Amino acid sequence: MNFISVDANNLHMVEKYKVTLTEKDAEFLKKLTTSGEAKARTFKRAMILLAFNDGKPYENVMSSLGVSETMVFNTKKNYCTRGLEGALFEKPRPGQPKKVTPDVEAKLVALACEEPPTGRNSWTISLLTNELESRFSIDLGWGTIQRTLAENQQKPWKKRCGVFPT
Image (cartoon, rainbow, N blue to C red; front, side):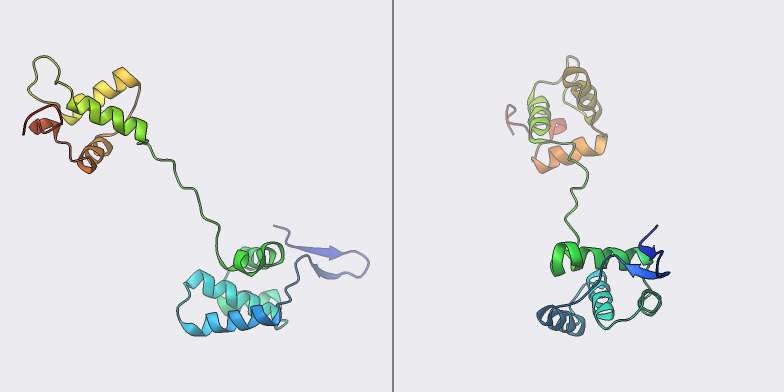
């Protein structure tokens, strides 16, 4: 990774992102690092910014804080491009999309409340899995179906759905 470029004329290291904290930011970071309430990552990012504000070189910051060059570079870059909050806190991550959308949940619950297949007294998770696949091309695992039904207080194997008397 090329985080630092070389100036060919002077043959010395030229940093792309220079950290110069405002007095307000420096005061906030000092309070944050002494309060004992910051999360570990936030604490380390704050310490990185304070160290660079004091003029410490990369190697000293990385070794004294036990962090990678990538973390140091990203913290500096985020401070220069996104400000103090952008440097200290990560952007929210979207995560994996939910498999059970409201539409899928409605289809599953409606299916569980239908009469069971001919020759069966009640629905089983396996029957529901197969029926969801064949009718709607919805592929859900056993646990996902069980959890979704439990969240909706549905127990089709006990015939306790909306269409069956309790």
